Length: 162
Image (cartoon, rainbow, N blue to C red; front, side, top):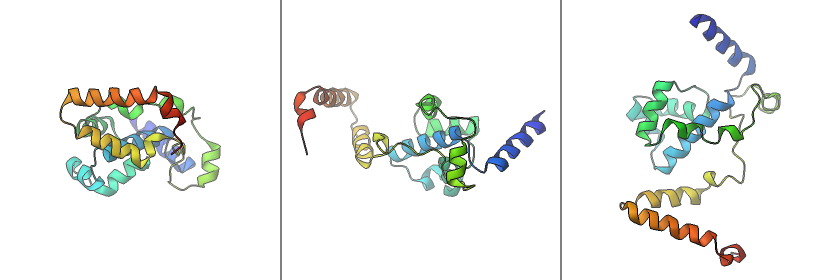
């Protein structure tokens, strides 16, 4: 049975020529969290006893991350395993995306790209999150969040042009 499953997976990858959308999403979430914490691929790889190239492959979705490895990564990046699957239901992906296959034409590049307006891909978001986690006092972090949220509720924050 196990050999049959491996054969099916290998045939799927060979036939499609692309990583699965879920693997890509998990890799992107891994990269997001790693960069938010300011951890390099080299440092994460060394902690996992991997090369940075293997970390790159995980982040691109080119190589699948096993459950035990994902658990280990979640501990290092200080997030629950579920973090890597957040927003997955929003992708609305088919099992095989013919559009993605046609656009990438067998390349191992990402078949799923984050939307251009995704705030999680912005440099300012990373700066903000890194600064937030440098605040040692949990109460101060909570006050900071409350302050930021209060700005989003004021009419002046909506009207500001620059």
